[in-house]
Image 1 (spheres, protein in one colour):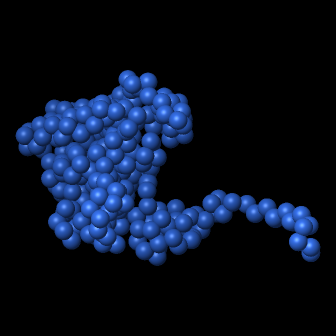
Image 2 (cartoon, rainbow, N blue to C red; image 1 turned 45 degrees about the horizontal axis):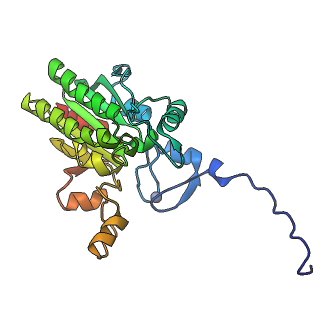
Image 3 (cartoon, protein in one colour; image 1 turned 90 degrees about the vertical axis):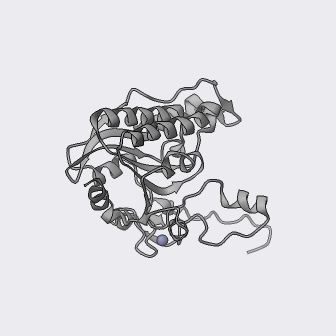
Length: 272
Ligand SMILES: [Zn+2]
């Protein structure tokens, strides 16, 4: 074949994504069906992958007991925000159509192992689980209802942090949710916070770290600012396991790492 002859067309191979799941931690490839069957847990490294809010609720709440509340509370676009890639309203509407959720936290009453509870579960697929004004409002209202009905609060967090598109109104939710949880504690009710992969930014800096008991799943990423931002600020190399669930447990930021299969039984025991 001469140098100037046109290259033969590459054979078309169907995208590997459709068949294989790739563990985000150890990069192992496995059949997607194996990944799903294993409850999105990597059989090689025990990384606990992301679940949707509905999958998580099905695993934690007693069957048939979950009753969703505050569905009428959703995002608000006070700033009419848009950036180079489009406007906030179109992006969030596309997310609603894709996920079927209309905020980044799904809230409801339920029973867990026979104990009544107020359960909130964040969904990372909804705008990166970002903390918007609707998210904060749902959590604040959940605290109020929990106090009125004497229900302990359980929140599963998964979030990249504050929702930039809502500006200061998003940041305000950090104070608002923290105050609401303060009132819950004043009423003598427990709050169990489960930090799942990833819980970062404004969520880790507010309600996710305020649990009477803070637990996490193996290998979850938990932190505030990202590794690169910190390294560039302090001009030091951070440890490899920095911001991992295991590192945080070792340094006392987290009370316990709980395997997914044990999570429901653990929460039920704590509620009991
Ligand atoms: Zn893995």
